[in-house]
Length: 404
Image (cartoon, rainbow, N blue to C red):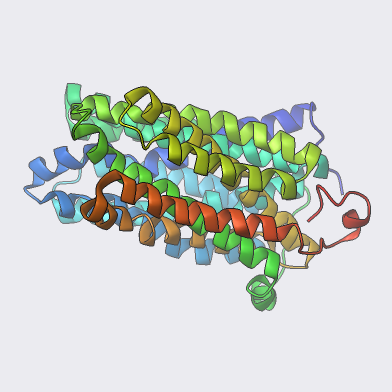
């Protein structure tokens, strides 16, 4: 099997294109989050109803992941990546000209479905095409791209909407998606090591391996903690004692590049010291960041969010890259296992993250921090437990630290 090593032109092309693909996917996914007030006014809907423009996209993505992962085991990785990026950008342009609220919701649901092609296969593609000693760092770079994309989707639309309106805001993000799709179409190397296989044959194994189940749960809990905090942080910053305006409170998303850096660095550390050592550290970092946000100090609040973001992307970057490696070692289709991980990840976002509103109503920010700390703690315990789960495959006999 011919794989790309770090420093080679092929390795650099793969890292660049998957980074760009991550930017496009998550910019498009979160493109309406900063526009919810604008959409509520434009279409005469309530704030709660406007949130469906984001919820339906994540629902479509989560459900479609259960199909695109197994599909990639037959259709191939690169074909699905190209189709996903191109179609998502086209649907994004259509969203910008949606004539009615229900048409926009339908298009956002469709966009979630079309976006599923990339996250379902990205880490599986990296595992197949790159040398094993670069898997974790490459996955970290890809997750870093998703962090940057999540920030870009919120900031670009917020700024463009203020100047030109929500339609031009969505069009701007869609054009970013088009640009990234072109980069990927031109530079992404074709799969050299993909082998088609019947995905359904190993579904039970993907849902019974203790390490994979732990990784799925880690993704759900870590994402639940992360989303709960960012769902409630606007209420915290616009309330006493901070009393910031909506624009200033929204600038908190500028800490997202910390996640990009964290995922890249944690990937390198995982390649060097092992995933089992790095992931618990990320959970601890998340908890430390949460505690820093408790005092009524804006500098500490921002610092705490940055530290928490770094911890989350450390955990998610390592876990998402570990899933296809573990799956392959256990004879499970990598794309299918990656889809199960991401389904759990977005379920955590939707279910656990939605509890933030209830926590805020019951006990304001301390209750939100307590809720997020519980989920971060669960992910940390599961990460520590993974240190006792036996590795699979011959690599386990060579290097237990970086093994599956």
